[in-house]
View (cartoon, rainbow, N blue to C red):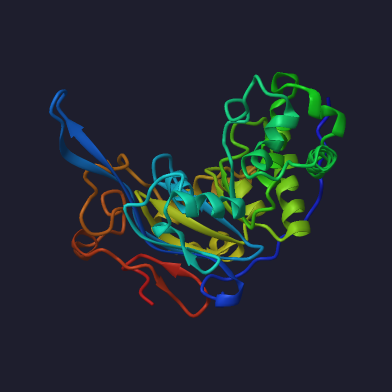
Length: 346
């Protein structure tokens, strides 16, 4: 079976430029801490993992915000907490004007029609015992929207067509599809309830490179047609650059820089962002030989006991005494970007 692709365009936007009318999501000081217990019969909390530790950002309607960073930096945890698949420890999550961080189970059940998720593993995220028709239609069944059999079948066929699959594929099982096709099934399932926000948790990292661009184009085409807003979690900076309007760079549970896609790649301000971009290989050997690299040494500190001050200071070649003792705030500047670094005050 062959993959299909759909072209699309995405327009860049600037952080801080959103007004209340065009902001779909506003996250303020979000924290997700996981307790660590010791003991068998009598357990006692002895520490906590600071997975997400004071993250703030806004997302406009129809915008894609890329979340990037090393493994374990908290980007996937942030995405899961935003849609309450993980319970936040503190902070506010204002989605479409309502703070869902304080919603109970029944309130969140109703709100989930407006926010969905596409998972990283296209193999593990689909029930192998269910036909595609039932996988894609499960959200409709859960929310009681499958009452008319004819309309239900038409809806499934329409959803499959939207992601580039044929309607007759609805009667097949997941094992009969390639990885890229399985991810398209996952996207169709996420679209079933016509959400406004979709969290994409590294949705192409498990796919072959030849298929990744096709699936990314599906996301972009759907966004253009349906006005979707994405939080796109990824570690592949080339993919993030292609699909994102703005990019937030995370390090050890905190956002260290937010900027439009073009600004971030043209002039990264935070030393960690500079190191990430410098690690991207360039095909031209002559250009590669002339590139200036920011050398980052050492290992990522443990989220069980984050460093004082700036969390990047233990690996930053520009660190000063102030960096070791004072936590830098994520401060916006006049050009619509924000950076948490003492070297770049507002």
